Length: 278
Length: 278
Image (cartoon, rainbow over all chains, first blue to last red; front, side, top):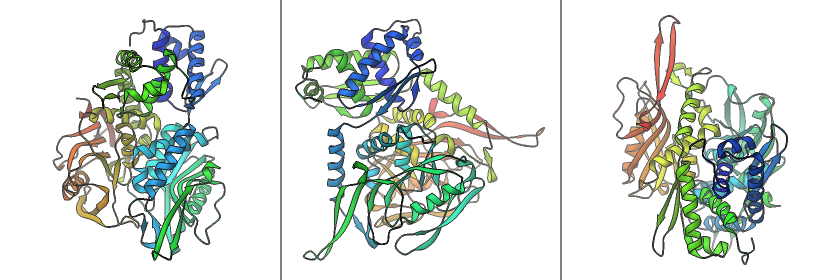
C-alpha cells in the first residue's frame, strides 16, 4: 500500500471491515486508520458509524468505542439469531447420525469440532459469551479440547495453554495434581508447565465434554495451585450422569442424554441446546 | 435482518466484506448476496469488483470468481508483504528471548503458537500457501500441532484430524503403526481412528516442529495405510539435525540452528526464515 494515497469512503469501508474482522476483540486506534487512509479522524469516525449500523442491523457483532487519546474501537464478533438456530440444528442433526454411543457410554463428538463449519460458529459463540469478562488465558486439557481452545483464543484475542495428561519432554518444570477420571474413578495425573500460567490469572476453561466432572474439578484444583482462578467454564457438550461432581457456573452448548429404548433394546442419544443458551 | 429491506452500496460493501472474511476459501453464490441485499446480481458483481480492487491493492487477499450458474466468489486470505515481515520479526525476536533450549537440545516454541498474535498470521500464511492445492483434510499428531492445525483448518475451510500417540477411549477401531522418535530412536506407536480419514484423501500434514523427521515419516506411512497421500507438509519450525530422515517437499516457516558459543560456553539459538518463504 502506498502511504501517500488517499482512499475514498467506499474503499475505506472495505478495508476497515477487513481490519476489524482480522483483529477481533482487539483495540484499534482511530489514528491508525486515519494514517493508513490519509484522512481525518473525523472521517474514520463517520466510517465506523456506518460499519456499526450495518453490524448492528445484521447482527454481525458489536463495535465498542473507547474515547480519549488511547481510545479506539473494538470489534466483538457475534452470531445472528438465524446463525445460532442454524448451528444448533446442524449439531443436533449430525449427532443423530452415525455411531455416536461408544463402549462405556462415551459419546463421540470429535468429528464435529474438527469441522470448520461447526468449529467456527461455536468458537465465535463462546468468544461472544466471554468477550466482556476479564480473561487472561484460555485453558484446556489435551487432546480433544485443544482445537476448540485455539479457535476461541483466536476470536477472544487471548493466549491459550494446554494441561498435559503425562509429562512430555521440553516443558521445563511443572506443577501436577492427581484427579479422578471417568465412571471408573481411576486416579490420573495432570500437569501444567510452571511458566505457562502467571499467578493471579483469570482463566477461561474450555473443553469438549463434561461427564462426571472429574477432569474439570482437577483443572480447577490445578488452577488454584497457580494462585489463579476460573473466570468461566465452557464445554461443547455435557452428559448429565448420576453422582456428578459439583461444577460451579459452567456453560454447556449442548446437553446429551442417553435413554434406553425398550423396544429397540439399546440406548438412544437425545440432544438439546444446553444451559449456554439460557 | 429484514428480508424486504434494500441495502445501499456502502452497506452492501460492509456486509459483503464481513461475509467473505467469515467464510474464507468457501464458494459463495452471487445469488445469495443478491437475495440477501434485495438487489440485482449485476450490482453484487460491481460491489465485488470494488472489494477485489481494495483487497488487491492492500494485499488483503484474492477474490476468485467462478462463472456459470453454480459459480460465485471465493475469498482467499493472504498477508501483505508488510505483515509477513512483521510476523517474521516478531517470531525471531520472541525465539531469542527466554529459555528456549531445553534438555536434549529440544527447542521450546509452544508459547508462540498458543498466542493469537502469532497463531493467526501463521495459520493464514499456511492457508494461503496451500489454498489452491486440492486438499481434503489437514492432519496433525497430538498434542503440540493441534492448535495450529485447527487454525489452518478454519482458514482453509477443511476438516482436520488428529493422530494419537496412544489409544484413547471413544475412538472405535484404529489403524496404528510404529515409528522411531527423537535422537534416541525410541520406537513408539501412533494411531488414527479408521473412520477419521477416507481412503484416497489428499492430506495436508501440519506440525509444530521438524527435527530428525521420525514423526513425519511415521505420519506419511500411516497415511499410506489409509490409501491416502500427502498433498503437502508444513511445519512451524525445523532444526536441521545430523542424519535426518528424508522428508519430501516439506515447508518450514522458520529454521532454527543451535551453535555452540565457545566464549559463552553454551549453545545459542539462531533463527532464520525457512524454506516456506523461498
